[in-house]
Amino acid sequence: MTAGKTPEMRNHCFFTRSPSLPQAELRLADHSSACYGTHSHDEVSFGVIDAGSARYQNRQHSHRIGTTTTVMMNPGDAHSCNPDNGEWSYRMLFIDSSLIGKLQREIFQCQEQDYLSFPGPLDTDARSYHAFSELFSALQQPDSGIAESLLMDYLALRFATVAPLQKEVLKTDTAGVRQVREMILDQLDSKLSLESFASETGLSRYHLIRSFKHVYGQSPHAWQLDQRIKTAKRLLREGESISDTANQLGFADQAHFQRNFKKRLAITPGQYQSFFI
Figure 1 (spheres, one colour):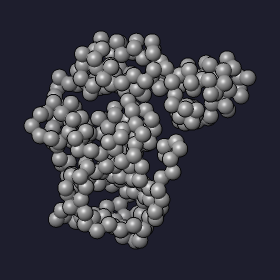
Figure 2 (cartoon, rainbow, N blue to C red):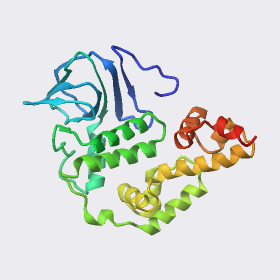
Figure 3 (cartoon, rainbow, N blue to C red):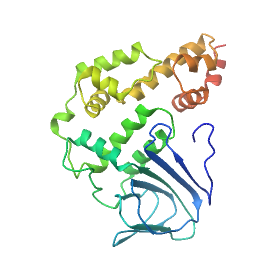
Figure 4 (cartoon, rainbow, N blue to C red):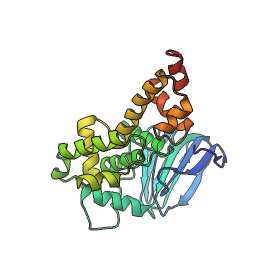
């Protein structure tokens, strides 16, 4: 998880605060036997079952859930969830409801309430499971732009039946995309925020993300990370050290650089450099 921090382990579980989004708390249980009586959370909470099956009760409704099921709880929902056979694995996110409401208003252009409630207590669609996994992974990393972009995408997927996206929001603004592309290439080593992109283009953050993804297939921050890795390959081929390459390109630390390099090339920076030096 976060560098320099050892998560508290109890019964194969840990909690940690996201380094990229401090309003988010992450929980992971790996082959845990933990059981939970009826309780509620102040946060918007949702998660997935990675292994095993369980009995999930949300308010007055009981459900049998299994691997890849997504469970969702609105703030204040009385719920319980316990494994069928004494052991299960799952991941949960607990996110401040004020942040969820702020992002929902930005995405859906709705101002009526503090936050939109989940349309249901669970989802068995595999796409929801994979979207959660991608978001959970991003929230463990220091890239706030990527984490926030993925959270917006996840909320758009989760709440689309409650507040459909306005048609005009889906139109691609190619001029704004070009502006953001140039900003990224001119400041490849800088930690650029979604706010700075939105201010430069005059677009809402979510409109900007959707437009950029339509053209390049990735959010602005994910695209910036790809450009950093491409530049890193050139620097490593030219003999630059791994630590200096990471510093030059604005990575949080060498471990952050190595993790993202290997994710894209399936080898470490050192292994890649060994082919050329």
